[in-house]
Image 1 (cartoon, rainbow, N blue to C red):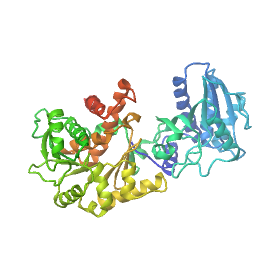
Image 2 (cartoon, rainbow, N blue to C red; image 1 turned 120 degrees about the vertical axis):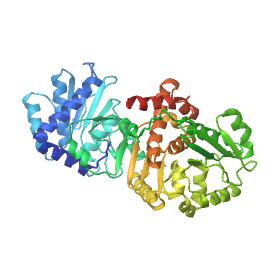
Image 3 (cartoon, rainbow, N blue to C red; image 1 turned 120 degrees about the horizontal axis):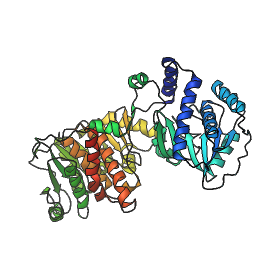
Image 4 (spheres, rainbow, N blue to C red; image 1 turned 135 degrees about the horizontal axis):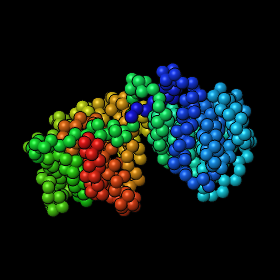
Amino acid sequence: MKIFNAAQIREADRLTIIRQGISSGGLMERVGNEVYLWLKNRFPDKETVFHVFCGKGNNGGDGLVIARLLRNDKYTLHLTIAGENTPSPDFAANLEKINREGIPYNTTTEISSYGKGKAVVVDALFGTGLTREPAGEYKGIIEKINNSGAYVVSVDVPSGLFLDRPTGFAVKADEVLTFQFPKLAFFLPGNYRYINKMHIIDIGLDKDFINDTVTGYYFTDKFEAYRLYRPVPYYAHKGTRGHVLVIGGSYGKTGAVHLAARAALTSGCGLVTALVPQCGYVPLQASFPEAMVLTNGETHLQEIAFALKPAAIAIGPGMGTDEETQQALHNFLFDNKIPMVVDADALNILSENLQWLELLPPKSVITPHPKELERLMGTWNDDFDKIDKLKAFSKKHSVIIVAKDARTLVVNGDAVYVNSTGNAALATGGSGDVLAGLITGLIAQQYTPADAAVFGVYLHGLSADIGVAETGTQAFTASSILHYLGRAYLQAESSCQ
């Protein structure tokens, strides 16, 4: 699903009005009705008390439509209109309807008592066109909303949130009902506190505009992810499914290789070999009989050499940063042309030897967590600066970056993919090793590195979404991802039938 910026969203609205032969007020009525229906379904109890807050722009006009429909449906309504600015024409037209129907509202900063339990705030103060920080009366209302204890639903965006720059103060929404497209700002770490859940409301914007308009940002929902899925041919055998080599491990850290190797095999590749120090031989052979094991060195890798010809390589899990291992990595990178996924300690070594990045095969996948990413490309001023630097780094070094976070980004040059799956259960040791192995296994099965990164991240998160319902967040481990990966694949398979 494409992610558009504010200017593109305005253009989508404009063309929809022209091409569908409706007025801007008619589009506003459609939007308000869709939100009202969602609220009615979400809060069917007529004892629910709705507090609707409207600015005087078009987002506030949406709020007036919502308020009118809720009141007509016999919900208890408290409507507040804020601001002394000139109302937009569509807001003014909807305010006339409010007045004609005798729906009371106030224009003060005083907010009636919320109480607890069934109070719901509908935030329609500001939309995507906000250009400056909320101040004065608006700031006071946002503070009262955030401190109210009520359940907060924001219309399109949490009021105060900027789409194209850092946000300093905004409504903290329990749920955001955003129109037609997700917004990039929703998925950036600096804005996590403003958005608990997001729902995309289809308001029927022009499909030709959506299909034809170019963007560099994409939201990987199930429809996008499952288009990448490649079913296993009925005539497949282990020799046609790809061979993965996992290189890593050091004394006390061979479990990372085990997780990555198991993930590669569970992803569907045909064969897995692990190259580890001698100290990892018995643990791997005993705990993972499906894997073949090569060894070098006693407690850490001293040389990276092998006779086999793998289809893809994962390097770094548990590898350590011993000087001999660092030299072994350099020597290996100098000669290797096989597609790679670079993770963990291999990234830490590269961060101390940035010139070695040029030795990576083009379109290698790197999988840094935030601190590893900072060591690789330096600090950033804010989330938008971070994205700019990710794109520049990806293009400079011809790598695909899996920037791990609560909302993982896959960056391939100017293309940025925001993952839609996953939860806090993935915040556990070994989760990244599983992801590295999973992506490598997909590459071995002839997914392009970019598709493997996007689809692998999606499956990784989906496994956690499926599993957490049974295990709970706290008891979920990296091995749980592997346990539930099959169910994630079943969902992909069912979508292709």
